Length: 445
Ligand code: PMP
Picture (cartoon, rainbow, N blue to C red):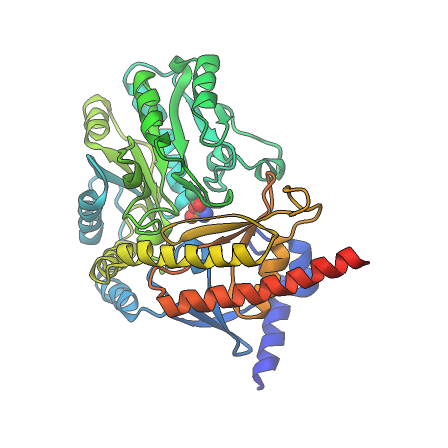
């Protein structure tokens, strides 16, 4: 059978049977999948037609060690053939989960030394909200239930995490917001203070923030912000949760992004980069203080646990993935290549008058599309056109087009080298030239 025949068959089956997450169901049904990937190597993916593309997003900000890492497959194979899985409920445990938990304690800032494992970011978020509420309940403050989060913040899609997410289209999907979630302005201390005053600190369990908002458009918390938030939370007896689901494991040029600010949260969430996406895993880290209080004050069973909490194979892959990150100095590479990426963005900004702000922190970055005549967003979104032109030329990037954003976002694998960064910038430039042409033609019509 010809390769293209297989492609057509898969396109058809995909349309009929595979409901894609976070996608336009209509578009998928009408046009079919743009890419059906079959293999990956380093920073590149190959699809059924043999087309090779540079992955400018590390898939969903997570394939940090790049594609095709045999060490990770071997770690999974070794663990699966020994003991693939056994549950960690009650008094059961397994060696990879214990070893990964203690490795994470070694890596995490401050006294974040205990881990509750999940299978991803959304589960980590719901777990954190429940643990925060449970903590206050045990301390005799059952009324401290509200979770404050930020506009443009993204925390996942189960009901709790959707409610904490500050991007309104996610709420309008079902119009059913969970109670006790409140949003404040992005990175605004005044808005947070005002919210605490309005809602009452005695009703607030926790404040959650991403140090760099990812899905909300790669918005980097300004210097000093997280330090002030730490103070405000302490003064008001509010727990600070930092969502490091994207930013953890080297993405921003530090092992965890809160290290840029010298702040230790009370709870820290991770997922994605812990296994570089080779297998689902996530978790919530808590400080020794919280861990001890939970031990001392709780009675009976902590009735929260996923079947796959502490999954042996996932944890074995996580351990090997962290070993790769450390052995290959990927945190430092992220910092250095992030600067290279920023230089590339700056050169494009000089060349194209419709590029507004550009920014990076390590290997997470964004370029904003701005109408040079008004200095505001164009009437129709431009970023999706850039991303479509880039995809045609062999570069995958994502776009953010809600809450007033018209932004192309980037998050390449942390193994990317200088030459590959230059390739990324050069393809992006070609895509921008194509968009520029269409903008000029549009003006002439
Ligand atoms: N938090 C953040 C900051 C995220 O970016 C994401 C996913 N993009 C999540 C939570 C949810 O993670 P998951 O998709 O693994 O449930």
